[in-house]
Image (cartoon, rainbow, N blue to C red; front, top):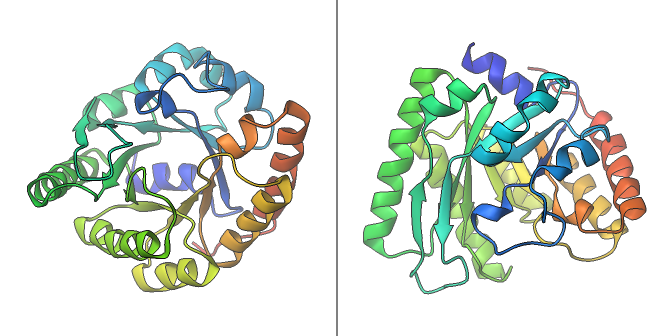
Length: 260
């Protein structure tokens, strides 16, 4: 399979992708809504999502389900980070699997965190690690989704500016797709225009009303982003409310086409 094939499965040209992340167990404690890690796929896979962001354990346990639902894409998280609550550079990042194993499992893309609130030495090691993964992804023809983040930090203006800068570093390291927390419509559009690399926007923790989530997605789509990564703002709501949010989000994503 080629890089282009996998990238187009992950980010289709006939709509904005809705990728539901359910890989939180790699970082968080036991989290509400993911008590049974394999449950979200059957619960949400028929609700107009285009794919899921998953852990190696989830990929292995759900192979039969995805074989029966080949339209759904799988983005494999290949790393972890501890302790995400430490804002003073005390966290530790590492890989939990490799690109060759991801290809063997048949996933469509791999995903890594790119945390930047680390010591200078850890930042250099992080860039080295990402560079090695990019090289392996190019060798195996599978896209890397790289997530610049000031991990665990509140969404202050300074943090948003820092994540914009780290997104540029992600581009320079060769990321095929960049995943970033929503920095606002204007900033997102500028990143899309300047970097010219597919951008996907993370929804983050459950916050606000359903209308707030839908409005943020609408702004994301207007800015030219190729995908929305929406998890807790759907599956941590009451089931009926979550389905309604997802239905409205899907309408917005289906209204956008791309000339690839």
